[in-house]
Image (cartoon, rainbow, N blue to C red; front, top):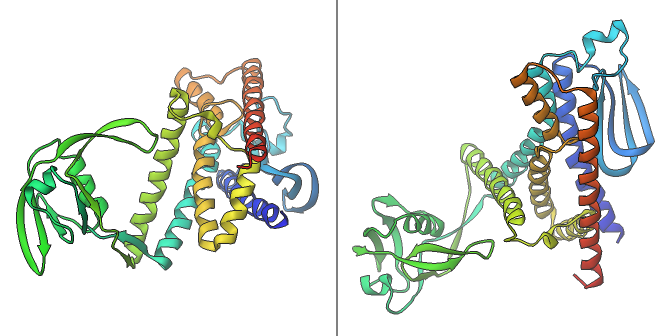
Length: 356
């Protein structure tokens, strides 16, 4: 239990620090005064003032905040501090300060993925045929177990995923495949057929296939620094896309909202990943960081996305929303977040009682 709690605090601490660091650095870049930089909420258990800013660690480790001079339009500001006021900065600068938090979460994920793939490389499943199903395009074309696919329709194939992607997007058109068999290169013509299969969310989808499975042979590939940059960007983008799709599927009813987890689930998973090794824990932090970045961009008042929504309206209309409108919107946003927290806590407790 202690190991799980420590892992949970470390994971959240890294995520929150990087998020708030984004707000802080961009605020300072635009010469906005930062009054407080806090990791956590509630009573301050440690604090130290350096220059204009009080840096502190607070009791409740479920977030953090950066308090800026003139953060709210109604704040009373001394004349000498007016040039440090957030609300008196140009709209673009205010938007950049707010957007920096989520953007730094994506940056953290990218950096973690870069370090992992640069030092550990990647594992690639080779395009080697395992089983060939009877009465399928592959069987008809003469593919046999052990064949290595070298290219499809003139495109070199370096992994099983490369081959699957090309075949899947073929729309059923004939494909020329170059295979290696016993040291010889053989050209075959194959026509993929449309089949019904399940996607990642359990939905029935149509996909073009040829009726083969992988042999499971893999190889470890070391990447150079430039390849690692591309792979890190690809992983960050892929997890971002998957996270957004998951949210959409929840609203569509395809994925059950019961799958949502809260702090207890995160703590359990953090403990498990920490026990599995530093690389597993780092990967977990990167995934959570992407999730945190996306969630904070939702157009919900009190979240960064809600502030950006108001800035967008201000940019279109030429005037900021009134205090009454902002206050009402923030009340609605807080109510939504509280309801969500109660729901995910409930899900966590149900999992515990059910032994999940």
